[in-house]
Length: 436
Ligand SMILES: Cc1ncc(COP(=O)(O)O)c(C=O)c1O
Image (tube, rainbow, N blue to C red; front, side):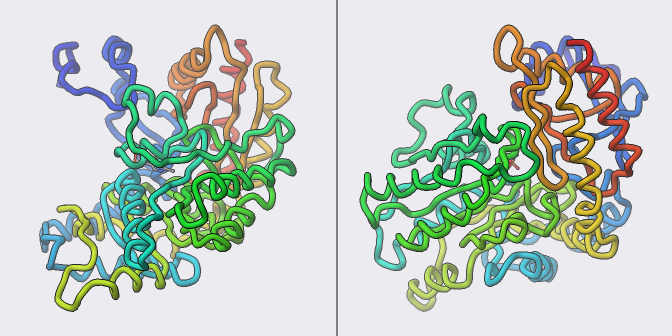
């Protein structure tokens, strides 16, 4: 198809400068393994696993075959009052990866839906245990929890909130953990555990039995890779335990091996009550999200309902869609048979060395990283984000796809990446940065 400006106009792209994009569209028309192919036939190395979605590499034939077979066998099942075997199989497979007793899996279609589902589970849980006054939600400055109304209200990224007014009452934000003392720290910074005590202040502010849940990305990803300070997540857990508050880890980016273990909860040794996930659950091949819920939370909600009644009035037409379940099962099989989480763990030191090797460049303001996730922050230009947008274009033109947020380039290579591909990513970034 010849893409004239007229043909581009109808698609309103999300989170995109539409006017600029339509002047100079950057389209992908194919993908394989570590590479995209542009509309001009150029190979573009993928430095961000798509959008943190594709750790097993692009266009895996096993996933395509599973989806194709599923669509020719059972294309759709109503998700309310009906089921299909793939949904139960996938729930079992996900539960086998989640920590401890987070064994009940509620399916949805995206990370945003997972977050809003988790909000409703938290509220329903407290109502079921007769603490209906627990309605406050806590998240953090600089957090990203998707774009539905609940998740936007939890968001701490100013641009994502400012156009939308008051959103939801009763959301409190802990301070973020990006501290100058931890600049250029590999892994967890030594400073900042006390920032968790903001939660205590909220308890004192609104009352001991008023907070329903705290939402935390173990590593805040979209905002530019903020690795938690040492002891921070443990302290948050302790305060939650002391005051009966549910702890939700939003692992939409961290989940499925990004931090070296199946979930960051395991990497950081802190077990939350709920985990939200999406993206790598299907290797990005089908839209799907999920919430893993602790047994006690599930039982409380279910057992509170009278016999014969629906226990939780929530769900999506496409919850546990058969094609998404098939993609999820094929994906988890690949992760297991190819030991991809272990491969990612083994590649991490080499990758982090490469990223932290950029710190001597004068334009680099900070480097942060953990596992196969790293943020390279450059000094702002005329206004925050201007240089980041420019860098984004420069990298693409040099054959590298990387997600940028503001002035941070966020690297999240697929777990199948070779050292040579890590070297290529770093060389392209170094070359682009050397122009400043
Ligand atoms: C931590 C976190 N939560 C939620 C979301 C929203 O996911 P989705 O874009 O699939 O709705 C994202 C997306 O990047 C995310 O990083």
